[in-house]
Image 1 (tube, rainbow, N blue to C red):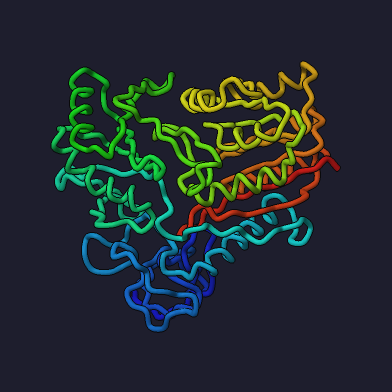
Image 2 (cartoon, helix red, strand yellow):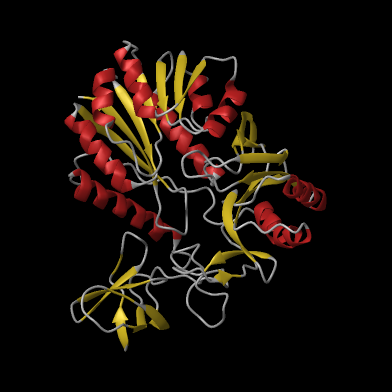
Length: 437
């Protein structure tokens, strides 16, 4: 049934929230204050609905610049890449702060005002900020596509307002070039280096046989802006997926975009790297200011490709850096070989615990775990007897859980700094300073 409803709030996942006869109704592409015609499904309990017409826009609604965003006629609408392209950027930042505070209260039992929360650091660019992205291959149209929201239906993207211009040009050219090279991977990841003016590609689900490698060479010859390709097989479930490189897929990025003097860092499209290079520079600067590594022996967990390791090593006496992903630590070693960094390959908590049992002591610890966080953070810090630690997180829920454990182990939350790494989405990055109480 179609109802006229007003959007009262935004849910943590980015959808608008309305009420119909006491039921919460979650509506994508809606803004607080919108009055909408909403197609409410029958039933009881929470409902997920779509709107068909805006009767009155809310005060924070803006015109989305992308023709693929939001409801409307045509097969190229309802793209799942953005949630808030219709929302003023200032309101997006407020909502991210609010979601972080709520996760701290609900999961960590940290009441608002019980810890120092700093204003969110905005992204230098709210649009055209992504240097890497994942795509699917439209087998009929010979194009790279995104999926429609909550489906596997392709959206044939004419232009993506989240991608850096160079990456968007590579995306546009890549699909037809794949077809000419007779390559059909299930998934493609592209990365762009503005410093090099070239990109690299990850092709998932392809064998690395001689025929495939030869076709990849043809692809590179056809696309001069493509420096190299990584082929990633399916694997057998027990070992990592087999990886083969063709060309030169390792890219160099400026650590601070537009500032070559800040140094260069290696990346490859099959290893984790922050997609927003400008916001990442602000994230690293925040973490360094909290860590205060000058003259300290620093332990870094989940060092990845060395995003924080290089800047920390430039100030610290020594760095012990731990990473479990082989290709990532290889890139970090190549960047920082011969310096004051010692790398350890393996599971972060196990290696750090072993260092503690050996009697190693550190002046500061830096943690940048994946989305599922690191259970056992508090006991580890306690066993290391470290005076301060900096925790970088991409997920407020697991962050709040781990901070709760750290406080139970004798630490206090001394500073919380959210950073907007992903404008136009509900996601937020957070840097937290923990000090021994």
